[in-house]
Length: 267
Ligand SMILES: [Zn+2]
Image (cartoon, rainbow, N blue to C red; front, side, top):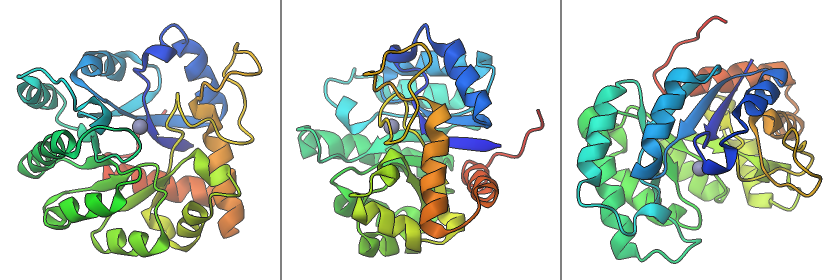
């Protein structure tokens, strides 16, 4: 049984396709999905999927750095409210981003407010640091020992950066990039980090991996990703580290559940 440590199941691109999504995840042996909110606009949908989707969901609620622009004045109250409804939820996907042009003076206060909330409420955080891992580290450093869990989703930084985050107690989540032989930095980090500090993810519906299978019912040129492709990521990790798939499954599952403060569930 596998856990997909980072997806966006509530994404509008998956609406109307969720039973196919559940089928392909089940066929691949994926029994739990960690689904991350991105803005107040998708929290309610994630909340209702958490209660109704046939596969277990561990939700996180937060504002993604891309969505930090144009937030309503009460976004923070809304976040506190939804977190109060889901005492097991984490705070994410939050962080800093260097891929798109969202000004730092907008990203940073939104990120800091959510990190401080995570400290105050004692919730784990799901972090996005694309092209901003250094700044993310600086923000995290003073708060890391007060956070119950830190997940670095889509980790792609250097092994030196990985060492620094490792010392903060972070867990590293690797996705489809691991299946790309040119992604040297990411693959090197995945090879060297302690296995019990690694989780795997698809980041679906994005990040379609090399060697992945098409979303059921989609055409050959579709890049819509799904949790069934977690096996492609797992296989890449298994090959890189020369560790059998069942050991990867067990260790990543235990690490994910520990991080989110959740237990195993039968069936
Ligand atoms: Zn994401």
